[in-house]
Figure (tube, rainbow, N blue to C red):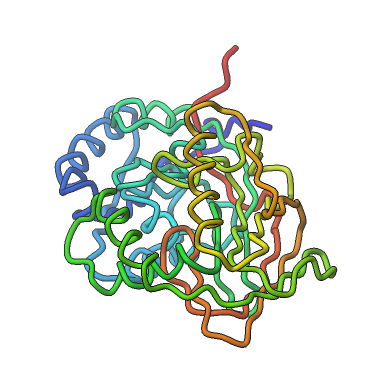
Length: 310
């Protein structure tokens, strides 16, 4: 499950890709400390600061001369790096979480402390997790993708967003959107079988946490080669409210709450389509509209993680 790469890092040169405005500006303060901690452990670092959307993806596309990437930022920065790297090179990534949700960091128990992250890099312990791929558009995700209500929130929030963001802003936009959002029918296929023709909402997850105080799959494993898929069968807003309420209860108790009009399936391929303009989000970023065809690429992303207990 875990691999020790410390003996293989001969050049000990790292590429740091950082979003300086994430974490309410805390990233800018943590970068010098991180570089000092890494230098003390024998690493050379080159710093690349993002200044616009897509910059992290461009920086990640070039890995020549580096042994690993370090991503400093939130889930959006991580998502861009994952979409920029060449997965065939098996370039490990370390993540210093500095965003609002930090879903991936919570999933893998990654520290915010620069010294602890430097220790993880020096140890070189990695784990390989599944990557989701939208084969219609060539976009990757490692946490989740969805179509429907929450995607509409993400789309509108991304347009209105200015500067750093806070969790309460997501909640505020959620309350605004739920009043006006019209749930459109979604056709859902899982591993080639039609499971619903007029679903109201679909969540395709690779991890336990959804973000914030919400958990839908406490037993999810990002290394099992399977998506966890939730399908709200009816187009009723009260079902949406119940679904997200159950996510809150699962977060609090660790128990998986089920609702009658919601399917929970697992699968390797998910196709979603609609005659309407149904928005899509992937890893918390706006990702266009349906249709999408999502496939699992098993254990394709190498991430540096704390070493397992002895």
